[in-house]
Structures are given as C-alpha cells and as structure tokens.
Image (tube, rainbow, N blue to C red; front, side, top):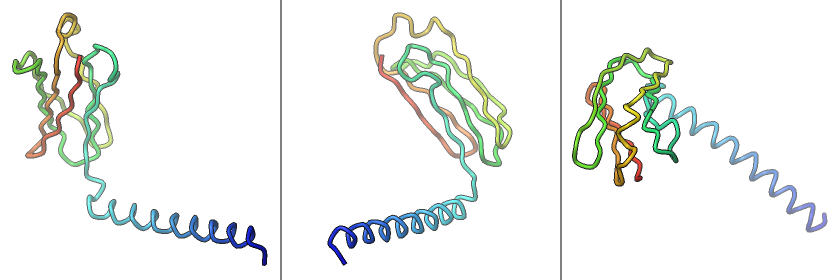
Length: 120
C-alpha cells in the first residue's frame, strides 16, 4: 500500500472518529441541560442600535431587563417569552446617539442572569 493511500485512510478514520465523538458530546450536553436554556443578544452588535433579543428555550417565561450607560441605569422593563419563542426588545433610540463608552444590558430570569455589552 502506498504512502498516500495510508494518509487518506488515516484521515478518513480520524474524520469518522471525530464525528462520532461530537455526536456523543452533543447528546450528553443536551441531556445534562435538558434543552433548558435562554440567551440574550444585540440585534446589530456593530451599530449604535441598542435593540436586543431574548430567546427562550427553557421553562421560565418571565424576564426582567435593565439598560445601563456606564454606571447609570437609563431604562428597564419586563418581558414574557414563551418556551421556544423570541422577543425583540426595542430601546429608546436617542439614548446612545451622543454617548461614548460601555453600554450594558442585564437580563434576569429566576436566579439566572445574563449580561451583554458593547463599547461605543
């Protein structure tokens, strides 16, 4: 058997082994978390737009959020997000027009907290 055939066979074996291991790791992660998670992210992370989305894949549906410009809380609210749903939170567009610095969004559901930020 030539050297190139051995290398091709080795690459195929490694590809199959890594695919199988990824399959099992994904199943393990899904079973340990139970598919119970939620996330928060900016809709347009590179602009001055402060609108963000809360995506829910968990049982909790009540979310409270705060928008901070530096050390000053400028806006807050509450959202209901059903399991499997998303809610786009529209913030005051005039808040970040002349602001330069760190902007934080803090979202709380039950005892879990997520925080995202952008620097303008």
